[in-house]
Amino acid sequence: MKRGYKKLLIFEIILFFVLIINSFVTDLLSSTKMIFFLLIILINFHFFFGFERDRHRYTKDIIMEELIFLSIFFLLYYLSGIYFGFAKIDNYYTLNSITTIIIPIVITIIIKEYLRYQMLIKSEGNKCLIILTTVLFIFLDISNAIKINLNHSFYDKFILMAITILPTISLNICCSYISYKTGYQPLIFLRLIIELFMYLLPFVPNPNQYLYSIIWLLVPIFLLYRIYLFYQKDKDEEILRNYHRRKIKNLIFPSIIVLCLIYITSGYFKFFSLAIASGSMSPIINKGDVVIVEKMENFDQIETGDVVVYKYNDILIVHRLIKKIKADDHYYFYTKGDANEDMDNYLITEEMIIGIVKMKIPYIGLPTVWINENKR
Image (tube, rainbow, N blue to C red; front, side, top):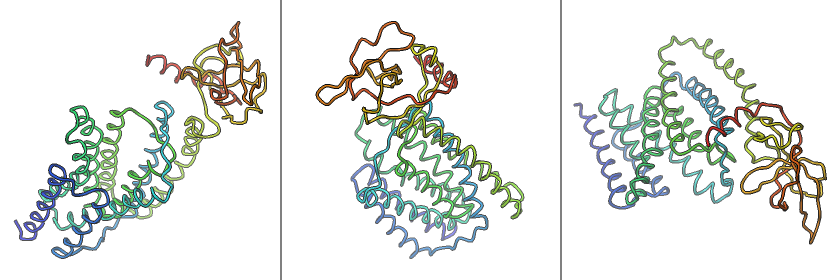
């Protein structure tokens, strides 16, 4: 083994030792301390090994490949929220959140991925060192998570394995390949998007824990395969430019369609959609129709004869308003399904009202109704 390889091997083993202490002995590296720890590593690495310049030729092309891949993935991912539902994200656009969460994540990613690149370049293609570097960065990502879950139950440890460790292994294998082949810039771009989207967007799809784990286990694998195929093809600069332009243009229209679908199905905006699961409003609104609902806060605007959506026993009900009374500055509502003989036998309060049906789209909700009926 070359002397440079031995120095790099010793350097990485020392880092492993520190991370093992952090995970199993004492909590050395909180999220804030991790930044200073990475800076110290970077400074020492430069002192012992120096830095190599990034001279990769296809950096911009790989960033474009990542952008196209991630655009397609997020369109499909958010489209899946129509079935799985959406979870609202806390507001991270506050000074405290930006300074304590978002900025530390950005700084950590930049330092970490630049350091990964320098270590991989210094390995000069030595497979053992490349594998060791990848394992080191996997451990760097999960070190604090291991510490948090060390004394928890077996179930919590299993969830840690499924949701954190396996996707982290997959992501770091992909990252090491991209870093070695294309440099640190595409990698920083990739990780900033993957790790920040859940803080910057108002809501995210809400699959169960196991499906979430599978999704984020497979995404880096598919991206890795896409980048691998990129390097197997003959490169022509003009062909690449035209390919990327054409691909982005082809994404614009379906992106608009999907964003509109997400807008009306998420439930976090003024208008949302709802699939009708019963025939209580036939023949005006039938089972399998989708209604577009306008959320309502001004109850003066609700009139007798409107079709309203309200929540009763955690179930959304779409019935027609037949009577509205006001007492003690509060409105009370009486409703009835058009196909029902009797009105609903309970009083509906302002807190139960969600909104008013503004339009319907016939039958397109049948697949959703069928899926939900077969889940029970």
